[in-house]
Length: 198
Image (tube, rainbow, N blue to C red; front, top):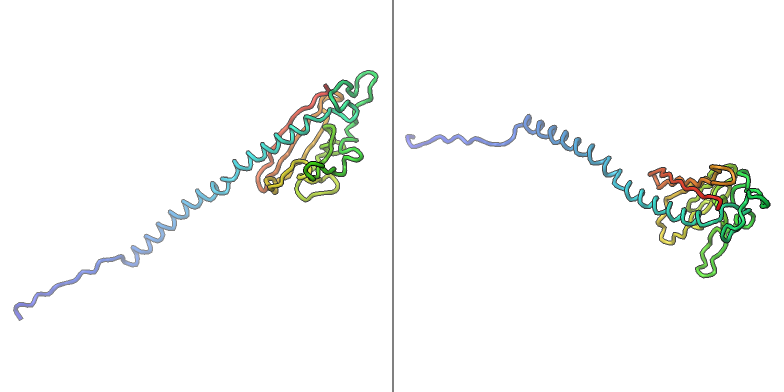
């Protein structure tokens, strides 16, 4: 058997140890990537909620600041201001909140939508400088329906709640309106404005 040649076939591949090392390295790499990405994914909605909260605050401030300073002030231009000589005193903080018929929402004849007919700044808050909370499907006590405050037929503010606090910054002169907006698991976003007795 002279012509016979012995050929050794060398198998190439991964050994068990090499496979285990590769799996461990890939696991460490995946763990590192996921620990960096997951928190960023969770925070990715934050800017959207911030923008929506700011838009809601702007809408509410436009509405609130367009109302008169006080129930005892003129509601049509400020010629008669509470606290001035010969005029009624301004409302005491213990009487803040909706007055009489303002507790029950009115119906807009043009749209058929319900709304709160507040006519002065402190109607939006609660008595003694406590917050009045507005959120969808909320009624009773210091909790009111958000959709009656801002028309939201599309449900843009479905997961939002707004706590409105009205206090005197200077008696008979300046009221501070503070909005604390919570958006789902995001927030609170706090906005403040002042309404003068003019």
